[in-house]
Length: 246
Image 1 (cartoon, rainbow, N blue to C red):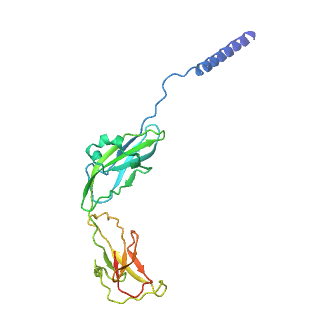
Image 2 (cartoon, rainbow, N blue to C red; image 1 turned 180 degrees about the horizontal axis):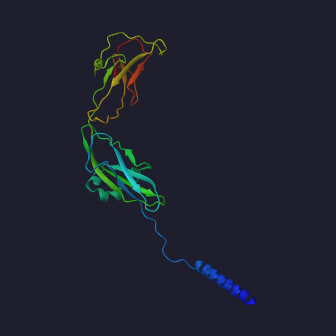
Image 3 (cartoon, rainbow, N blue to C red; image 1 turned 90 degrees about the horizontal axis):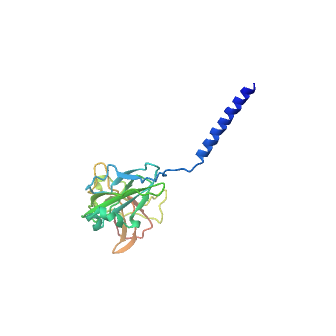
């Protein structure tokens, strides 16, 4: 009996010794290098193909990846500086900070404003930032933007058939007016149609319009703000001859 107890005490002592040794080892000095944060990566997808030419505001797509975290956001810059066009890589470190636009999206419609009849070269840069603030390498594509002036709007009354619409219309009827439209008198209505020579079969160029109303012989009644409305209701006009410009 005494022998069995001695064996049990010896085994228990050995177990305690092993646990103590494991604790000492685990509390020892940790050695080795902590993994450094890896920079994210960004790349273009299908649009634009390098050296593409656009006659409208294209949607440009990209994607990002971070091997040890996640992409926090993207930044893009549309540059027309001749120095960037001459050497896109050398210009990366000279891109003004205010030229970058931050976004969490992986696409953006880029309104590359170009004067009518011109073809201008652009360099489009994109980068991304990960959750620890590391920047990816900057990627770029060069492409061209051309622009043709939109066609002259065709104007008419809402009740007219399309074939009556024209770039110059004379309303022979004398039109009645009140201060405000109501349930009986709905106002003097005009509408118009717009188009652009850069329109494609699957994409129509978005247009904005401005209207100017002039009372003969040359009194400007109003000049509207630019917007995408394609109709107007006139009221509160004094007797006279008027010209509506669109």
